Amino acid sequence: METENKSLNFLEEIITNDIESGKTKLLITRFPPEPNGYLHIGHAKSICLNFGLAIKFNGKCNLRFDDTNPVKEEDEYVLSIKEDVTWLGFEWSKLCYASDYFDQFYEWAVELIENDKAYVDDQSSDEIRKNRGTLTEAGTDSPFRTRSIKENLDLFERMKNGEFDEGFCVLRAKIDMSSSNLNMRDPVIYRILKREHHRTGNKWCIYPMYDFAHGFEDSIEGITHSICTLEFQDHRPLYDWFIDNVSVPSVPRQYEFARLNLTYTLMSKRKLLELVSNNVVTGWDDPRMPTISGFRARGYTPSSIRRFCNEIGVARTESMVEVEFLHHCIREELNKESNRAMAVLRPLKVIIDNWPDNVVDELSAENNPENPEAGTRKLKIGKTIYIEQTDFMEEPVKGFFRLSPGKEVRLKSAYLITCNDVIKDVNGNVTELHCSADMDSRGGEAPDGRRVKGTLHWVWEGDAIKAKINLYDHLFTLRDMSDMEEGKDYTDYLNPNSHILLEEALVEPGLALAKPLEKFQFLRHGYFCADKTTSQYMPVFNLTVSLKDPWGKKQQKR
Image (cartoon, rainbow, N blue to C red; front, side, top):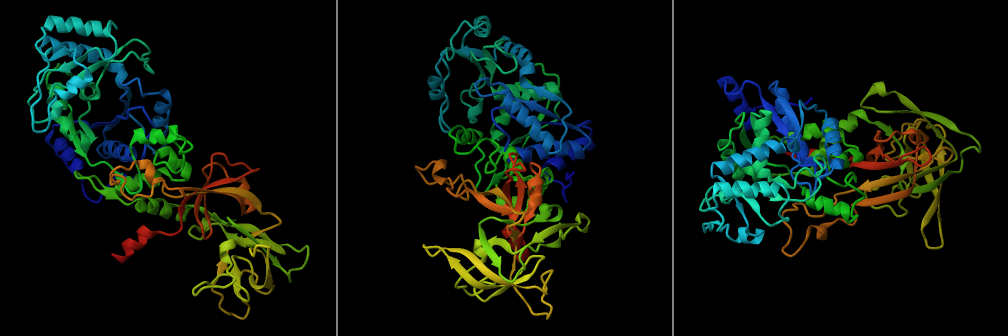
């Protein structure tokens, strides 16, 4: 598994120093998603980082579900997250849930109250927000901040017992309303939510806030290095304050790294959920989605995603990664490992006039020229075949080396043919070509050694099967989705051509036996995988990535 970098990143340096100094005896990390949606490619970076560090330093990594908000969390998401982590190739040391610690969280909240470091506030959420202050102005103390410890303990217990409606009051930490860090201005740590929890049912009607629970979860599990993305940097003083002010079993430390920003990609779970809920996409695993399940459905492999996450590195500052590099990673892998096949996406009929009637020739073709062990397959050809519509041009432009009137081309692994006649319908559309074959050119080489530039893929009418082909492109047209024009929403940048369905494609007969997610290179088109709905009666294939590698070409020019 790909866990090594050429040089240590800053987190590896920290861990190395902690181990060498004896500060850390056993590295324990965690991947802590909230089960309120499916994981996306940004989470994959965090998964590879946390599990990868544990592997590199012979430590442990927990999978923990931060399920402190019953309003948004579901078992469906828990199951999908487990599947994604496992699919990426990682095994967790412990499977943990924040909800397992609710009793302990409550006790620590009581401990804060007993030490006069937390109080029940009856202000509305709007009032709390208003009195919080700004970056340049200090906040205003709540009129309930001076409540006695006894009164706060009573009120907090009554909150737990369900005596108050949602929004009636909250529990806040008593820190510093004049702090320059707004997160330290008496943050809310418990709120009333009379909702059924996916694991604890109706046992609780108060739930801890993430900032309150986060560090305590790490402490309970003995996490040594709590690795978060940069947006939690300003929350670290609060993380430490909670750890320092109750009787925790261990003291973790938080470190931050830059999250993944990918071109043409949106990675907000809230907005991704809107895309699913509003039927903009077919589901969380729509191949256009940046979710791990979406990439899986599109034909990406765990190793290609691990390679991508490893090679983009770990940094302290935000940057934008080109999605073409992700494409490059899967393209290089599939080039080596996927078998070749011929698929005509937009068929054009070709009749070889001089081919003997009722004669079928059996040819041999390499399955994968990059892998001799992949062997060969049999292809049949007869009088009528199909080629791509775009492989014919009646009036060819300069540089067009494919089929045109009077032009000779090579049929891949078969024969040389020349176009003699063009048949059109009443609207002038080309519907059929009549060609002649050089019957001595079996295998695609002219007996006299003449050069033929154009090589076309094809299928034989006698055994070609109909297939559906899903062509995918970026879901959004904007390169940097954080740079939207003022007044515009992310839906304004949806790509109308992100999905094109071709229902009349013709493919080699062997593709009828393709298993879901089996991968192929369709010659001259790109890399495809069989869709989860594919069957021998109606094969369905999804475009993973095209053959062209713009990222690779850019690197060669540097």
